[in-house]
Length: 185
Image (cartoon, rainbow, N blue to C red; front, top):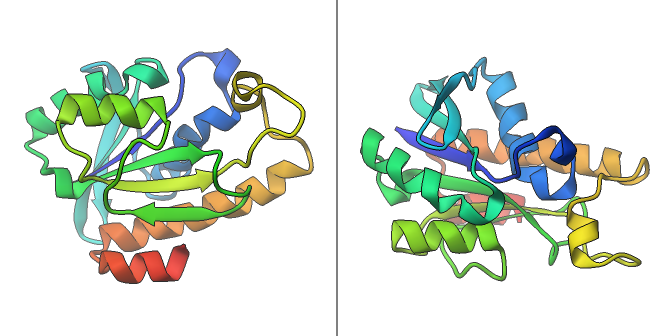
């Protein structure tokens, strides 16, 4: 079983904000594959389905972003999911808006949601799908990441989200990770 985790903050005030990029991408993936995220337990909303013949668990932690590991680790344990079968979808200010980047391991890079997952899971060796939101030009970091995409930014983000969903499809299908990085990065 593969596990795809989207990072974000819960609550309507955070809907469609840059920091909820992970939620938006996994919502699009789940919708495309008819996976309803209706189960609510272990500090998360999740659902499962078959994608490309592989069972996939799609997870949205209901903790706040900085506590995401509190949900991810117990779900991995409960479903006996190996860390190699986990992909976390996150926003990334160090990538230009519209770019995506796959990584098979690495540090948190300043992302508190990833930092929490590393602390709870005990390793950095899980997949990341980073979606670029760019650096703020005229806002503080907090105001920027908790702000919504502008009307000019939204189509660029939507294209990136579509590419991210395609990358997730290929990952679930068992594509070689190096090939995925070469194709999508």
